[in-house]
Image (cartoon, rainbow, N blue to C red):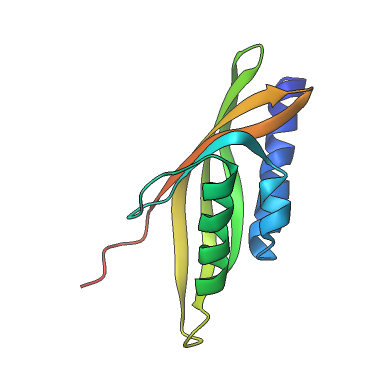
Length: 132
């Protein structure tokens, strides 16, 4: 990985830590102001206000303990990079305390803004088998 790709990987570590701490403010520091969050089974959240509301709702509903593994981080233009990750861990439903395995594949698009890599787009889908 070149220096920019390593910087993107470092942002992913910060994102993992923020998610595991249910820290919306820390997550938002990693997003571009016009960032887009595209969680599975939900509409896209576009822009900082919508992204913040989405993460507040996620962290109110569940507590995550996950680890992200970077499968690839590629700089695709001077100010753009992509990263493909896999995450695994646990999810606890805050209302009931019930827990379950959590596993996803993720795609991040990063934009370099004022010399800092920010999450411009983020989507994920589960890799857990369907529940019947």
